[in-house]
Length: 328
Image (tube, rainbow, N blue to C red; front, side):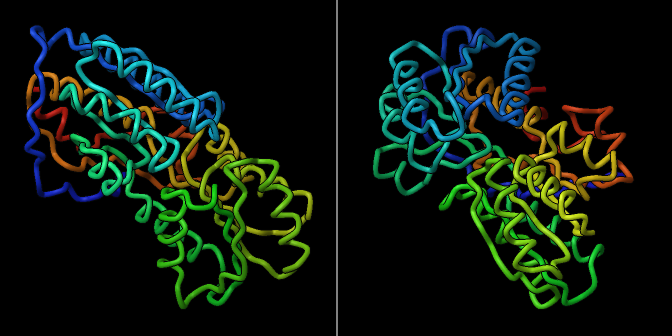
C-alpha cells in the first residue's frame, strides 16, 4: 500500500473578504509559474490547464524565462495584475520577487493562491496583503524521507555529501534541513555545496567531492536535475555511491528504474497545479480556504519506479484533497 506524507492542515482560516464575480463558475484565473526550462514546472502548468478545463475555469498561464528570471517573472505578473482576473495563482521564484507585483491585486481584493514555493509572510504583511492559501510540499518532511532511505542503503557512520540549490532558497534549505535531521548522529555529512539547481554545476561539484572524499558513500541532491548530474559523476568515477534526488521528474524516474539513480522523493507538481485551480474556483465563489493545504510526496526506488512512470504525472493512488471535497 502506498503511503503519502502530508503536512497537517493549518488550523486557521483567513478572514479576508474578496470580490466575487457575477458568474463564479466562469472564473478567470491568472497563473504565474517558474521557468519552463525545468520539466517540473512544465508538469505544473499541465496540471493547471487540465484542471481549469475540467472545472470550466478560464486560465492564462505565464512563466518566467528560466529558473533565475526573478525580475522577468515579476514583470509578467505586474502586467496581469492590471487585467480583470478573479484569482491569482502564483509560484514565485523567491520569497520576495512577486511581493510588489501583488500589491495591486490585493488592492482590488482579489484572492491570491500561493503554490509550491512560499511568499514570505512578513514581507507580504508589510506590503498590505496575505495569501488566501498555500498549497505545496512539506519540504522538510520530503528531505527527511530521503534521509530515511539513505539510512537503509549505507552503513551507520558513512560519509555523505549534500548538494543544495540556489543559496538562500527556502525550499532547498528545508529539504536539506529534513535530510540532516533524519541522519543526525547516524551518518557523517562531510560537505555541502550549492549547485544552483543546475545539472552541469552539480556534475562538476560531485566530481570534486568524490576526488576529495574517496570513501564517500552517498549524495543527497535537493532536486532531481542536480541528482542526475551527480549520478553522472558517480558513474564516471566507477564507484558505488548512492544518489538520492527530490522532485520525481520523468528523467529521474527512468534513471531509478534503470538502476542508475538510487532513489528520488517524488512530488506531484501536476497535483499542486490542479489543486491551485480548485482553490481559485472556491475563492472566486467567496469561500474561505484552509490556510495550508498539503500536497502528496512518495519515496520512489527500484521497487516502484516502473509503476510511478506508468501513473505519471499523477500519484499511483488516492491522496487527501480538502479542496476537492469543498467543491462537491
